[in-house]
Amino acid sequence: MSSKMVLVHTGERHKNGFILLFVMMVISLLSYLSITLMNYGMMAGATAKQAYYKKQAQCLALSGVSAAIGMLTQEKKESKEPQKDGKKQSNDASPIYNALFALNKWYEFALKQGSDGVDGTVAFYPTYEGGKINLNALYDFDKKEYSAVGKKVVPWLDEKLKKRSIAFKDLFDKAVKGRDQPLYDISDLLPSSSDGTSAIEKFFWVPVTLANAKSGGSAPQKKESVFAITDLFTVEQSAVKVEPIFASSSLGAMLGFSSGNAPADEAQKAKTLNKDELYKLVGGASIDWESVWEKAVAPLVGKTYTELPQSITELFSSELGSRTFSVTSVGSYEGVQQTVTALLGYQEVQEKDKMLRWFYIKKLYWL
Image 1 (cartoon, rainbow, N blue to C red):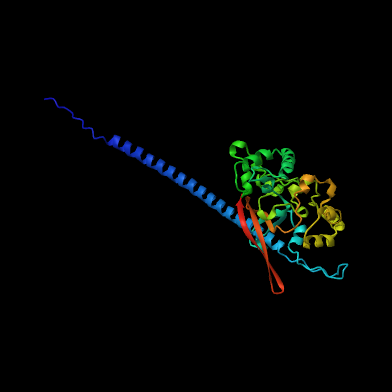
Image 2 (image 1 turned 90 degrees about the vertical axis):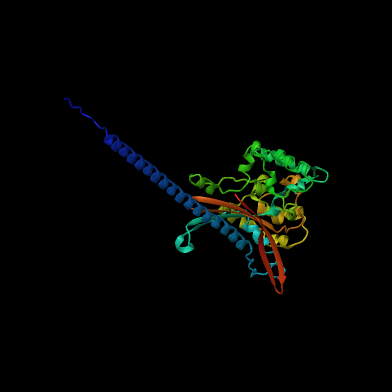
């Protein structure tokens, strides 16, 4: 009688192999999830940190606007020495008179945690809209053609700005083409993306030192010539004509005015300025620029009246007081830089024996 051996396959080995494979897959999946979550957490942390740095830099930039307002609203101290007529100088022309010596300069302050509550840098640059060329004065929107002065000034500007790779006439013609109303915002002069970015890159004023620091470069030892469209032009209705003693740096550079940026230049200029004449000029009424230029203005700008282009002198305002300022402020915190430009209106009210003066923000550009 033969016996048969019956082999029964239970599948234990295959089952054990499947469990091992499953465990390895689970471990791999958990490892992947852990690494992904860790990377996400690191990215989220870095993003949150950058957002915090950005907010701090924005706060510093806004504080620069406040600092500029505080500087412009400071009362001019009454002179202790009488003028030739025996009277002391009053401060009725402030802050317009103060602006003569405060505008068109970069003010930069390094802040420390111990004394200021934060580590960072604030830099601001105040300008006066009356010291810029009003684009709306160059065009007659009713007749749809250049104004009488625009026919002279536009070609002059186009020639000057071509040296800075800006086709001003083309940009201006596109901005005013078909318009029935004056330009409302200086950004109307911006080209579209299809027109290139040369004008956009020079549209806002950014300090050379901070611009280089932003890209990781070192600050230059010598300040370079900086140019911006917003520093040359305005569209403010209160600043239709140019008040030349407040000429912006960009306009002054095109006219050949002395910059006065270097301390030595400012010290030398202070010796030659006729401050009494300037004070009377600022506090006066109608101004004949040709008659007062050599005595009061030439020492300030380093240029005689006869050296100026006639097309520009026709734009000169016979009165001072557009009372509109702008401030570009840059805040830097932990390597993050934020820039804001504020257009400031100015008002004053006589209350009893005191003149109340204040500024208010008309427009705000985050750059």
